[in-house]
Length: 175
Image (cartoon, rainbow, N blue to C red; front, side, top):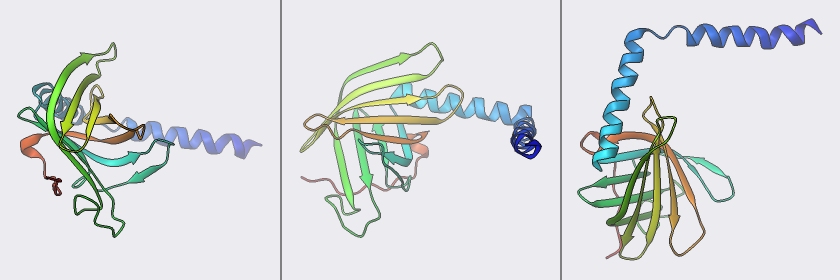
């Protein structure tokens, strides 16, 4: 019985000691990274580089942030999903790429300091409503993509970076 109590206690102490090792310089660096990401999101010149996708029924997949992203620059947006499944897909990377014009852009800051950006993308063969939320104090973000003509909601988890600092690889888009 004592062992069952000691194991979680030791785990909690280990986690507390790891969290306490953050220096003021680390905290300042995190704050600066968040400010850069927040400014990129507010200016509409950002890329959410996704490392995880969540599908409509809750299934998740770990993906490459180079080929899975939500990007906005110059009044245009791109949403690209790519799987490493050996099938070329419509974008040549095993997925789809939606390029289009941004409309109905709304920005909101909630009571926790999270920045929420909502917009619509109208492309040549698809359109979607997208909501991007940047968590306060971090570069971590989540984007929810709701295609206009289907209920196949998709959630992307990743990090926000300025568009000029991103190293994404964009696939083909249908004409």
